[in-house]
Image 1 (spheres, helix red, strand yellow):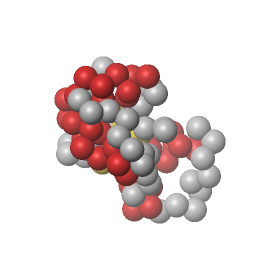
Image 2: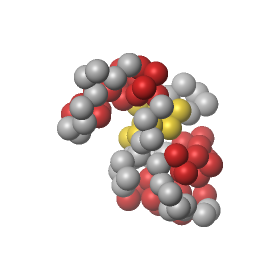
Image 3: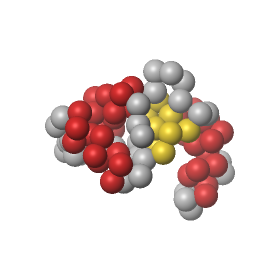
Image 4: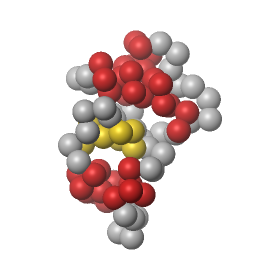
Length: 85
């Protein structure tokens, strides 16, 4: 379900969301993303809508602030992985 790019990005940058690693291997990272039902968004507008629908107060946030949110992982292809910890 998740691309290799998603999994590798999360594995490398999981420290932005968690104090301690939740995954040590590629397989553990993939399983973690599946377990927490992480979402891939095509744009920051989709990120905003997803977080809003999830009950987050994102009304006053700029797109830059959304991109820097700890649960948002920018992917090399321009998409965003949203992981709720």
